[in-house]
Image (cartoon, rainbow, N blue to C red):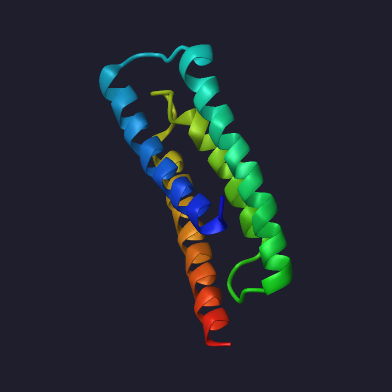
Length: 124
């Protein structure tokens, strides 16, 4: 899977997490950890790990101007947390939303860098 496609999937996961958290609060229920939380988290944690490894390599070789390895590591850690937290209604809303917004910003910045690199590559 290409980095661009992975970024777009991760952006959609951010939106899913926001919606799920809202739904869980409205439904006022606790999820079944092994039936709901763990399978979902395992799937996207694996994707995040793969995306991060590819991103580190891309950053190392292409040296984009506004994208750095520390951002990738922070995004990976934050997403792993809020993916799980999105299932629980007791998760604090403000910090949860700020984490998602930060992840979305980093993913969009990374996508912009990928697209810019593609444009520059096509010109050569």
